[in-house]
Length: 168
Image (cartoon, rainbow, N blue to C red; front, side, top):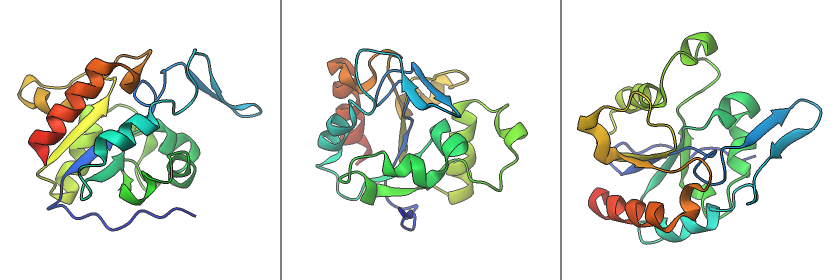
């Protein structure tokens, strides 16, 4: 079982979404069929790219901000990442003690900010295809990816590399 290591709020954090970042956002979960991707690229097609971009920053921590955690569990979501990314995991924005009805009313930005404030994190960015409710004064904290290709797009890779260099 993959367990999150202890979060160090003094070290930089990347909030990581899956759908629209590591693969297309055309992902569906069916009780009987499991996870189904309706796109050209496979599930987690950009995970190796993310691993390469993060490689120069060994102290960088990952927090899962994906709905996979709420729907499938932290363990299931975490074990889908490549082994090279798993040691960076420090938890998720959602956990089982959170009221799901309340949580589902929050934007991704609000979910992340809830975690940032709860853990007193100062240095962070998010990689996400969902910019709803994201304020302009925090725009530099978001690497916004396109729904269809996520980090498979060179422009998104360059933006992430640039923002990581500033963060770290």
